[in-house]
Image (cartoon, rainbow over all chains, first blue to last red; front, side, top):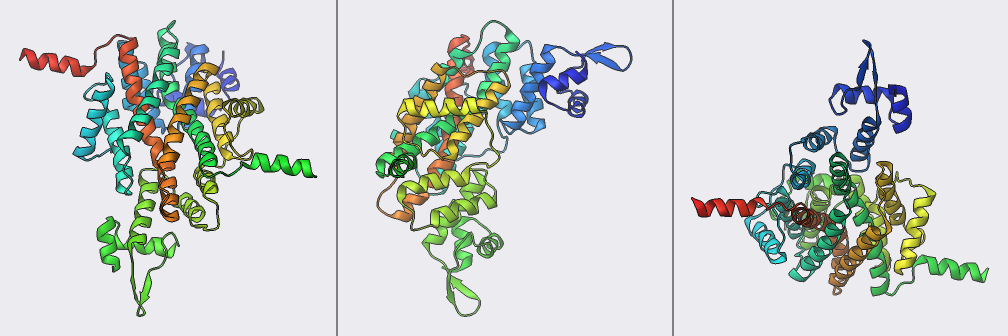
Length: 217
Length: 217
């Protein structure tokens, strides 16, 4: 297909596509003559991935470039793709106290999780726990273990759901699930929090009031 | 305490504290003479909350102002605090297809969750699901229900962990857990994903290799 068709199918403007081509985020099309090129389904998929990471994942283009570079490294073993995608998605300015880092290492050992000793995700967790400590909120061991059990359940289902037919598709799905599955889980958690709050504080949700009002009128 | 001591205890500069006072994010201290004021423990806690929301929660000051306004509304029932905090934390430019919005409503009904019919979190979830659809990744019902079960487990434990002694503390804990508990859950999910990936793709984590290498040398 020509660039106009690629633009139509992906709802990304021709100017933006050309920008991504110049920046090397999108591989060049097949040259036809001096100024035209043909694009195919791989370009459609790559463009959709870039837009999803930028718009839904909230990643900067620089961060997207890192993720794609990791994804496109064909010699990488499948297991390393996930770690590489994680590494590229992570902020680099993380800090955490030694005490919290030890707590994270202990938790991973207790859960029996197989996680690289050098994984930046260890620091990411320690950083998130320290942010709570700084406001005087200590997440106790019971609650932390509940989080860990829920996280394991989700992660096992996510990794089991990855396709296994085609390497490129598997790699893309890994990036998509990692970057865009998080917002789904967080939104569900907020809905479930509202429900738990309604139960604890005994307030009927507005839904019931509206229904009752509708009956009265 | 004077402003210098408040600054020392919270590690927030005097200039920033004065800015927050001018902007109404931090309540005024008790005036002592024309130019000095005394601050107390409530100011320490409020400053820590603001810094946590900005630095760890990634909220803009405008968003923080909305959250604090909701939190400080004393007439609000406890259940409404959570919904109000959610509303203030949420982006306002969400869109989703009618089909996905129905899917969300159906899921909430099936799970038996008590969620306001007008809660913006419904749209937040629909938006997150649509972001996956746009890259051609359909989150199937089994995986969605696994997410929902994990989210419910976490949310129930979170709401149960909120203190019940003092209204202001409960409200602050609600905001902190909502805004800063998410990053903890996501970091744990990433660690668990790595472990699941190591199991599925049969790669030993680097930890084992290093230990083996250490034994050899």
